[in-house]
Image 1 (cartoon, rainbow, N blue to C red):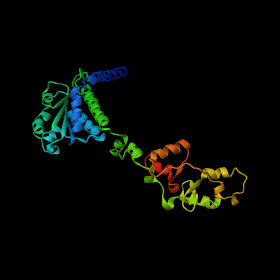
Image 2 (cartoon, helix red, strand yellow):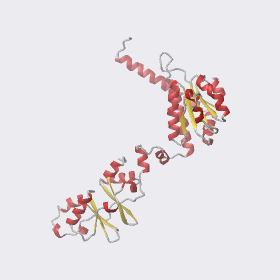
Image 3 (cartoon, one colour):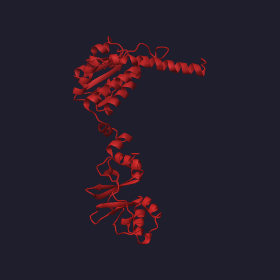
Image 4 (cartoon, rainbow, N blue to C red):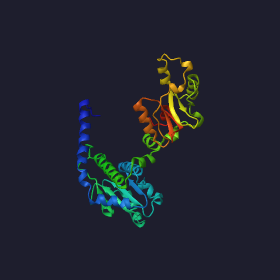
Amino acid sequence: MTSHTRKDLKALARAVIKTEISALQDLPERVDEQFVAACEAILACKGRVIVSGMGKSGHIGHKIAATLASTGTPAFFVHPGEASHGDLGMIASGDIMIVLSNSGSTSELLSITPVINRLDVQLIAMTGDPYSELAQLADYHIYTGVEQEACPLGLAPTSSTTAALVMGDALAISLLEARGFTAEDFARSHPGGRLGKRLLVHVRDIMHTGAEIPCVTPDADIRLSILEMTRRGLGMTAVVDADKHLLGIFTDGDLRRSFEDSRDLRHTLIADLMTRDSLTTTPDELAVTALNLMQEKAITALPVVQERRIVGIIHMHDLLRAGIV
C-alpha cells in the first residue's frame, strides 16, 4: 500500500477538483443548436421524458430525471438492462428518451434503440463522442466530452459524469424557465419539504378557530380576561363586540405592563388596558408571511380577521408544528 502524507492527499484532492473545473469551463460552448432543438422537442412533447444510462451514467441519469420531474417536466428513469426485459412497456409513443453514455457505444442502450425508433419516440443522446453510434442514431445530440478524467488512471468516470450532470441541470433549468415554472409550482411537487410548506400552507390551514379563540367583551374585568387567556393557552385574548368585530387584544405583555401603573386593577375594564389597532392577518395569507410579521414585531400570536370579524388566532407554536419555522 502506497504511503501518502497529509500534504500529498490535499494536493491529490485539489488536482481532482481543478481537473473537473477545467472540464466544466468548456461546457458552455457545447450549448449549441442541437441543445436548443432538444429543449424545443421536450417542450412540445405530450408524453414523458424517459432517462436511461448504464453504470455511473445511470446514476447521473437518475438525478437528471429527478431534477426534470421536480421542475415541471414529467420524467422518470429506466434502466437499459431492465428495459430489454419488460420495462420497455413503460415507454409509449409520443415520449422522448434521453440516453447517457460517455463512449456513445454502450451496448445495452444500443440494443433498445431499434425498439425506441419503432415506438416513434424521439431520442436525445448525451455522449462524449459526436461520431459515436448512439450520437448518429439520435434525433438530437448533446456533446458532453471532456479532455481528461480526474482519475489519474483515466479509468473511473469523474470529469465526464460531472459534465453530464451539469449539462442535465442546464437542460432542466432551461426548460423550467421556458415553461414559466414558478416557486409555487415547485412547492406543489415538494409538499413534504420546508419550501413546499412555506409556499402552500395558509393561515387558515393551521389557525385556531371556533371555541379555541379566546374572546372577551370590552366590559370584561381583568380577572375574567386572565381566565380566558389561561384557558386557551395562547398568551392573549381578543376583545370583541357582540358581532365579533375585533376591537383590540389583551396579551400577557399587556398584563405585565398593567402592574407598572398605579391604577386599581380590581375595578379596571379590559377596554382600558387592551391594545387597540393591533396587528392582524387574514385566513388566505401564507403562513410564512404571518411568521415574518410575527418575527419582525417580536410577537407570538396574531388575530386572524375577515371583514373586521375575528375568525381565528395563529400562534408561533402552530407555525413550528406545521414546519414553517
